[in-house]
Image: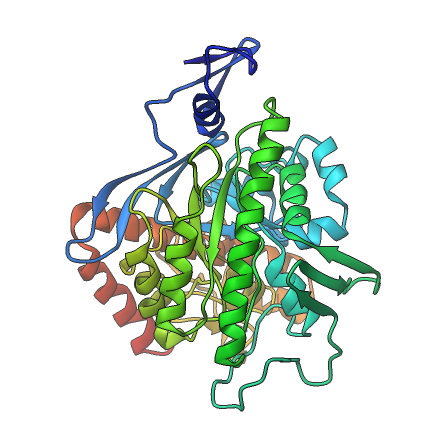
Length: 444
């Protein structure tokens, strides 16, 4: 099917919506869409479980799932070149709408040709809605929402010694920049507008982040608010897509909240799957958000996955530890992102098959072996633990680059192995082998 003229009267609105969601192939001055290929398809499943392997198709390439999406918060995976991320096997990167809104601004990214062109990344891209950062930074928690469910429940959760910078109402969130204190406001329409300018292949609906210590009453109110925002996000996404048919198609994911409550998670999921636009189209995929207790991660993902349509991808926001990856995949997650591999690398922590360890420990000062002799990354092929130890002690910037290269490759490679194991029917064997080594002994 050829789409040389968006105004072709032979196309109904539904057909034009179909054209916008398909993968464009550049040819002459026209965009030709292969409508036989769905946005997402499944080609292997875990027997008796919700896990599967498949393909997400975007205007900038396919993503084979399960897939780890490397986090490039400010249009960069810190300390590593985009070209290097490609060499490491990264299929896609995720940038942050909140941070790019504050600096350099979505208009500049749009003028550069979109997120991928701006950062010289030619593969698929994601942007989150900014909701997590607006509320987590607004409560002073920075990168992590510290959860202690033993503490007294409260609805005005704030980090110790911090001032609240974000305030939620039914229409949106008013917040002060963590950079300069200036006041800003995000609504569902603002978030979608920013993400359209950033131009990522996959974007997320604006949602309210809650914590595990918010009261049940507030969680119920927040689920309702997030649902209302999701409706507004879908409508604004369709409006902007129709207004700019010359731009590559963007897929919009709705986000499921509901904290640790099974009934709220399931209610929120069902409600999201019943949101449609005037052409009868709903969300292209779904994100599973909110703070999760590690021990309940698989259970919560399973609650949500059982309620979601099987023909749409599921993205779990914010995991990268080996046990979490296996649990999430088995429970139905297709993609996931996390800043942890790069963040801990900058603090001298590196992954190995027998656990994570700190390269600045004294024992590595004269250790001339590699981080992992079985790793195929650039760092392990060329550098020793002793050299990395030296770089950190000398406070050399190269330390962060080399350790980030290794950590990102470790997680990407592990997820690649999980995906292959689903297809060959060896998932359980791989899980037992990997986790048995990783958690049963301390790294030497």
